[in-house]
Image (cartoon, rainbow, N blue to C red; front, top):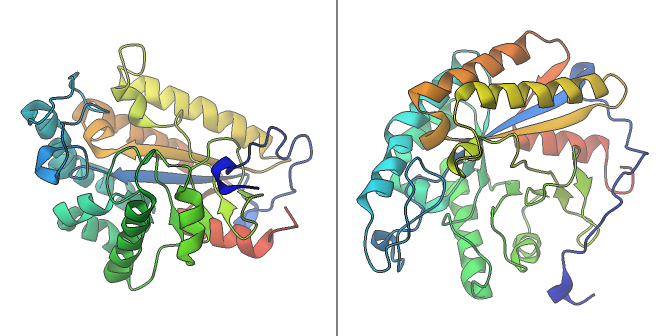
Length: 305
């Protein structure tokens, strides 16, 4: 198959024969929280871009071509200055771990909060070197961005990253991830409630991410979340179904978080409430993404699940 046509589409998946998963300690569900570390890596002429950012904040703006938008810049800075610390507290006061979806430039712009998350035992999943759309980006430039992300994680943790999540990948992204040689998994899929092995690149594990159990819906428009209670209710409803199904067929749940959104005072309580709700249940594995990937690769190697 020509790489131009990868990744191949798969409408079947596990169908009505999902693998008989056994999570650690007989958990019914594996729950992974991803904190998107993006603030400072967004579109801004100070970063060499030709326009200002417009996405996922509490301000509704249009792009300023060739100029700065101080409102959206300041909205993003709330996440880096305040929101990260609220998120960190929510997890550490419960002795829980999360995954950092690390935009490389954002990590260098704000190293203090990132180091605190590393010190708390959070793992790092590169989320691109910049927080923008990779579609149409020159292949050599994207390859260099991926290399930069690998070296950044190696410098910060002593080990190369195991996973990658571009968010807005190009048609080249997955091939370049495989080409890099150190990645066990890729998270740029949204099509299942369990990990699965890539058909195009059999040694690559795909761990689905989620845009519905995701606080980005606070910043997508007037018809999405307005209140923290809406976010909590959706997370709870999703968990309840997956937990019930997990009695016979254990599942996975990913929750995406953004410090500039969920880190606001009127919303952070919904995260506290959901974490406490999880802890009220037995047989729940709240895990880092790297740990989930390692466990799957060890217990369900390619050709088994």
